[in-house]
Image (cartoon, rainbow, N blue to C red; front, side, top):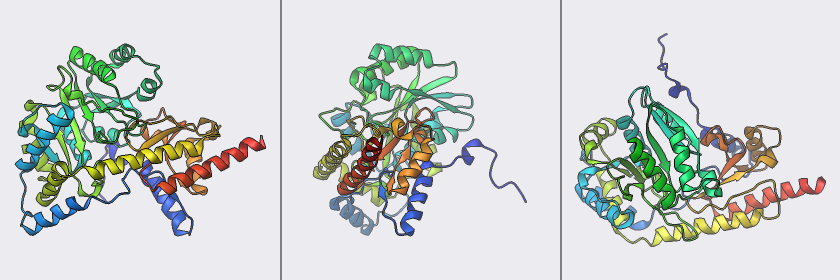
Length: 402
């Protein structure tokens, strides 16, 4: 029998999210009610005008091979959006429409990483990043805990720049940044991003800026695009998606914006030979999303903010689950060290599943985060409230027993 799977470590990895969701599904099949705080997918439907644009485009015959870079109309609209909202000036040929943000990140790492290269990944990081780097054959990543420290004020911008300098090795080619951050909800300030820019220019590094949650901001927080800072447009690959902003996860529409030097590779080569482009009618729907009414975006943002506030209020009065207040995205990254005790974080996740609350272990976002769990706000408001009630009831009872 021939060996069916190549001997590459990345192909032997497993998904923490898949494990938790499978366990939750098994409990539901047994008749139990599970509150799904593990998923990172909006629970809203795609706004109707976007759906209607897809149907009209498909009926009009937009079903043939696409330009692998994306339709010119959509890329021009994205150029206008980037200038208006992100302060990023670019040409349509610098933009490639992708099959979601994951595809954009895959192309970026394939393009930028050679065998032996290292990517410095600010942590906690989205769980897919190590796998996407691992698929760039011969490359590796190194995690640098930073978001929680910056959020707490443990690192000044100058201290952050010094930490970055000290963390660079001879093989480090670039830095991966995600703001607003999944899983912490931390939104990096202009001064904090300027520290990254300072080191990137000084050490001649490129940066991949993952801005998937750019429109999901709370408490007046402002999103700053790294490529808008002086000296960064020529060394930044910026990744965006319509999945979170417009509740279009299943549509698989994202885009990547890169310096002109990558034009011969990103669209004509990597996009063509990975997906041959994005379904044309879906691109017309994306055009309707970007250029059409934005009321639904604000409605969803307000709902996530209300759920965040409800979760924090519901957990008030107990000290086993400590939740820093996120200013972006739709997650909280709770410190559960008091609840975990001497057990593993997976033991705690299983215990919570037993009383119907599904969350992800913090180790999914880097091995240094074994005292944390990610709780998603992308679920019904009443389920968030009920999950908080169950957790508070459990730990209030323990406190009384002590």
